[in-house]
Length: 424
Image (tube, rainbow, N blue to C red; front, top):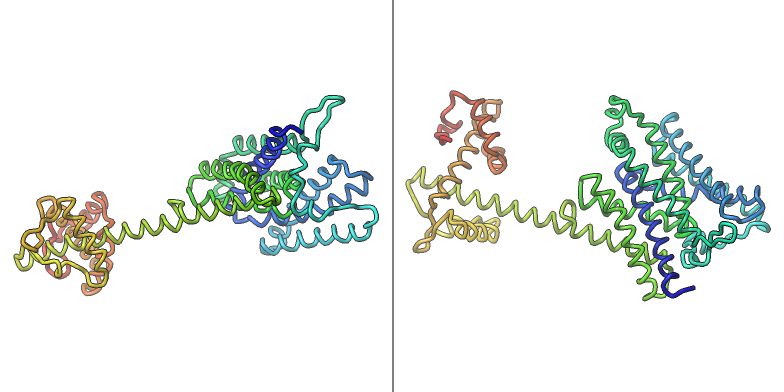
């Protein structure tokens, strides 16, 4: 086998398996059915054994048909147990796949002399042998058979997602709304689960029964951390499957290990990176947002303190110690330096005062606060209980909301403590 084409077919097979599983796995993650892939990868075992017993050969076609039929049966049983007999979904998955897997083990045991199954092939697949598993049409060599199978499955999955994107979207997030617009949520579910069954069976031979589970779950879970848009999640999930196949092949060469296993290790690494760096739900993104929020609140409090002091005592400047919050000294310190850099406050002889733009910002915040206090008091909250909720809401009130509150208080010029509400 050529030094280029051998690795190429292996990587292409892994990429097609990862992309096919990732595309549908994103829906499984969104529908909270991630373990269905695990169930199907075990439940197809009796289908494989029965196909062998009926055909008397280990040819891929009867094996594929038997496994696919058994996967669809497993899907129907899981849904029937859950919908008709009110069994919890996770319980129905566990009952179905353990029962079918046990049936497969019993069949293997009963016909151990006739069935030859390699445990490593079942667990880890035979992706390294892809270049030698050829598909022939008469005397024509069409290339590796797994590439044709997984390529066909990927094309069908992609077409399914593109054609029925809206139906899958509605049924995945709101089954009742799907019914109201004429979309059968049950039919969409069976179509999706049928596609998952076929994809699982198609990838079973190349990446193994256990590792195919990671391909169905990890890319979708990783993509979900990066975005809330379904199109982005689907695209990222498929791309992560492809990247894992390429990087996993080279990693397996470095480690001299299982190729399919290395591909899943890369998927795990991508999930770890997503967990840390994803802007929406990653740990670093959450930390940055928390810091930005803390600085925003501290900045607003400094402006309000300067304005309130000037309003109540006619003091136009305060010292560093007056402005710094002892409970969050470092945040207040950064906020004060940021306000100076923005030109909202000025420093002279160790004292700080509001600049022209600072007065505008502080007045807007004070108007927010006192409007909220008046509004909450009108709703029935006692005057001595309105400060804290108003203090939390004042930072997130835009112009439109502020004017709506003002319109709801047409004849009120002061807050519950008798202090004047600044004009707009």
